[in-house]
Image 1 (cartoon, rainbow, N blue to C red):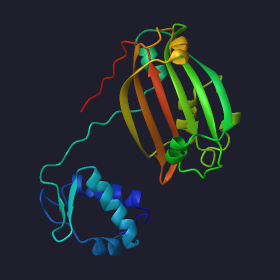
Image 2: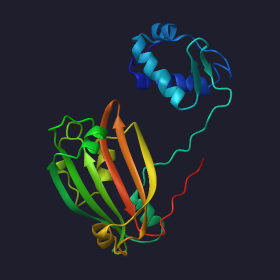
Image 3: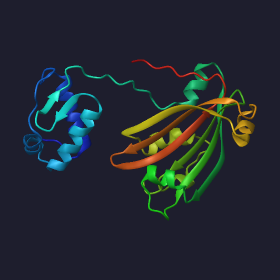
Image 4: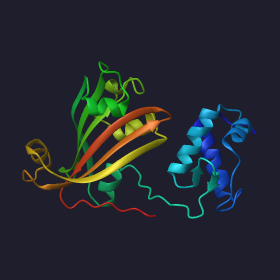
Length: 231
C-alpha cells in the first residue's frame, strides 16, 4: 500500500484499520517486520507506531506472544485545548486579551527538557492576561520553540491571542496536559485580583508537531473555574 513512512502516518493508518474491524478484538496482527515491509518503512519506524498504539490502549504487545488487538480497549478521555475566547463568549461575557510580556531568553532546565532545546538555546517567553468583561479570567505563561515558530516575536498579538495565532501558524498533531490546584503566589494573585494563597485551577500543556515541540504553557484560572468534556 502507498503511504507516508513516518511513524505518525503509519500509526494513524493502523488506527483506521483497527477501528474499521480489519482485525477482531483479541486477534493477533501481523508481526512488526511484516508490517514494516508492507508500509515500506524501517523497523524502528514501525516500532514507534506500534508503541503509540499500545500507549493509546488499542493493542497489547508481548515479547513472545506477538501483538494483539486489546480485547478490552481503553477509551481515553480527550480534552481540547481551552479556547479562552470561546469560553468567555459562551458565558455571555465579552472577551479581550492583553499581552503582558514577550521576550526572548534562555528557559529554565525543566522547560528546555520539554522543548528539547540545547542548553544555550533561547525561547520566546510570553505572559498573557485573558479578560471577561474587562475582569481577569485566566493568566497564561508560555514558552515557544523558536526553531519551530521563528517569527513569533513579530506576531500581531495585540490583535489575536498567541493560542489562536499558533493554531493558524503551526497547528499541533499531538500533546499532553496536566491539571492541578495551586495556591496563588503574590504575583499571580495580583494579576487575577484574588487573595494571596487562594486556590487556583491550573491547566499545564505541551503541544508537538511530529517529533518537534511547539510550545509549553500554563493557565491559571480564577476561583470557581470548571472544565467540561464528553467521553
